Image 1: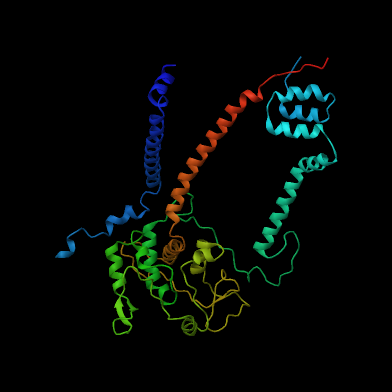
Image 2: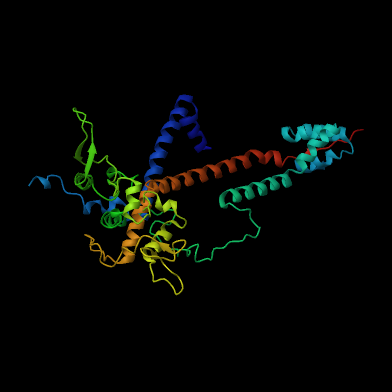
Length: 66
Length: 334
């Protein structure tokens, strides 16, 4: 009961807070989900993507001034 | 008397209604809209209601008949012949071309991106070997940026090629060095010139070649590495070459990839199969530049959609549990 009471008082009591918590929650979930899946993706495809091999070819800034 | 009946069996028994009045009262209290409508129709059974009932009773066979007819039509449309019927063909299997071997491409898994080092080497093979005859019309220099080369490298490569531009203030066309937005230069100005330079055969544009050939990567790789001497009895005309993977066997393109033909700056040994693998990876990228992000977004979409499906299944069961487990009280008419 304590948990549901806390939830009710914190989130559901006022509609303004309820709606804004949905928006903030969606934003936070989107951020966390993208971070987690992209991290898995980069780990799975380690060494194959352009960002993994880019350092071998990029000329450091200022190197072509000489 | 308590009788625990599922709504379906209740509806069925009411349809053959032995005592309509009592049952209908019981069912009305269930408040199931769909069952209620079908039940009230069955109760006032007449000729009008019976046609509708036969349609709904035969829904399953009708659905399967429609699915079968649809899949036969789809097959006929796709392959040009009705399935399950014998067909006469004058072609031997050899004339249809050997089926290519399946190779374990580094990008063939559903979660695997292209190997971008391979794309970079493949571009080098395309530029030094294939580009002498084959165009790559749908790829611009800018497409290579962030895929296989840095912007500076691509600007330099594009600048080495002359493009016609204009008109200028005097209305004249002029030549200028290439920019990132220019498309890959063509080896021939038009199709006629390409045919004239290749004994009448047109070297196909390679932008979409992986998508455009049955077997995709496997076929192109097999073709590039599959040149052999023609077997006894097979006659190849002057200027043609024998390749068992090419339908018909006689192909205008000669074998071009030989060990050590190009020199890879990253030190990879340039064997025939290595060059073929790299150029096929490059061409697959050219045909599907969206490949990597498509697979990544597909993975994310599958996770989200399966979670949402699981949630809605749970909510459905949760909401229906009291309805499905409800006990009905039957009071027989006095």
